[in-house]
Length: 528
Image (tube, rainbow, N blue to C red; front, side, top):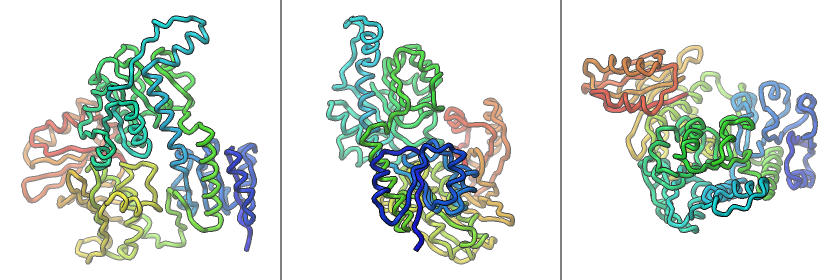
């Protein structure tokens, strides 16, 4: 049996290298100090690669990686990895999602204390300016203050637990969990985001997706109490940086602690000009313990992958062109898109997912179900959901998953239908693939439609009465939002459903304005 080879493309902790060195049945090389052009020349010899953010796994890298079967991203983010390119070539991409949890939690607590007591400013005043002026640095106590935690996942829940030890009143907002998960831990739970905006401190711990980008903007800051303190150690761009700057400058926001920026490195950012903000250069994972865990876990995953034992935390489903009929692949992609689309339209805690397939594609129901689960859970879980853990996560969250082959009862040769039920409602979306791989949504609930699942889409449910379309067009025109396509379907009970494809981003304010249109039953927005 040929010995498998592992290449380490970027620097990792020595413990990870030691672990690779002690594995007798694999070969490894530390190429972290090699120039990137030379790395490309070397990569073709290796079966598994360990990377960090310094190596771009782009098409050039993938083309050179002739023997590569797996990539381990030593960390959480995979922004520098061409996931689609890797999947098409049969390369499994894995990450190390939990090794830095405690580091991120404790950094958030450091920010919480620093924002309360202005510790960085007081330090600089004495250490750099050599001024001893105690009366300048009055802070506030954490005890009895209200902390709003946006996102109650792996990190947010631990931050909340530690804040309770400081005798803070902790409130969380997370529409993707059962309230009991927070309440059982002594944390209050709300479904009203405005409740979070009334807190003394606010910290965010969510994935970065269409729903969470700019979740705190100027409108939200205006609703906050004067002197609020804001913290972001999660992902850059969750707080709108222009709005945050104005809030800090006006004093509405007393203090902010920011570890992450929308664009990094942020060495010339205007936020750095303000005194009432504490910043660090994305240090969430920067502890010795965290780096050691990341390196050892990455090495363990690389060894398992090289031996073909398992692919822990795989983020993609590797398939090779020759292993699946060509007509099936677009349906897998369509299943994931429909699931993601349904989750964006029907925001809430997912209760059940139902997948139906008719025609020849029904023979691949298991794969269709996996892709549908990944799409359906991506909105709430971001990078944490993948093709390997989708079934497990669904069971862990007590999500009822049903998949079935059905008789070919439609006018389409092949068709898939996904029904997503949340704590709010159920939405059912059907789709098919036409010649040349053209994906189409053919119905939403019982209303027939015909549109490609691609781009920025407004979904508008209404009573089928005159004037609705004109009012939608007028409202969008007022905000200079260009309509690219307008598809309308009519139900049999005096109802209608419109899909409006637009060229511009749509804000929450615009959606609320559309909701106020007469005869509107509901509005939602999705991006694919």
